[in-house]
Amino acid sequence: MTDASFADGGEKPLRLVARDSEDLKVISSLLQDAVFPGEEMLWKASDRRFAILLNRFRWEDKPAAERRGRDFERVQAVLAFEDVTGVASQGVVKDPDIVLSLLTIEFEAEEDGTGAVILTLAGDGAIRVEVEALEVLLRDVTRPYRAPSRKAPEHDV
Image (cartoon, rainbow, N blue to C red):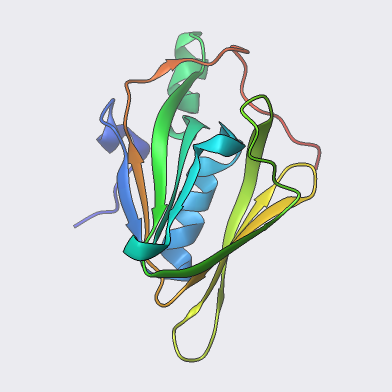
C-alpha cells in the first residue's frame, strides 16, 4: 500500500475528517487563505455543532493549473466541528460586507482529550471552538470555479 498523492484525487470533491492534531494539519493546509463573510458561521448549541461555509483556494490543484497555464480555482466547502461545548471570537464581525480570511487551524489539547480548536484569521481575528473531542469535517459542496483574482494567494516569509 502506498500513500495517496494529489493526482489520486483528480477532480473529485474533498471530504476529510480530522480526529487528531496531525489530521487537522492537513485540513489547515487545505484551508489556508479560505475566505468567508462572518454571517456564514453557525453555532447550533443544541446540536453541539459549529460550521462555516467558506470559499477555499484549491491548493491541491495549484501544480496542475501552473503546468497547464490555466486559471487557479476556488470551491465552496463546509468546515464543521462536532462535540462543541462553546465558541468565542475576537475581532470577528458578522457582517455580510466584511470578508474574513483563514490563515491557520490548530488544536490545543488538554490531558483528558478535550481542548480548543483555534482558527487564526488575517487582521488579528480568531475563533476559539471548545470541543469535548476533536472531530473536524471538511467537505466541498460545489464544483470548483475560477478564482476571482485568477492568482494563487501569496505570503511574505
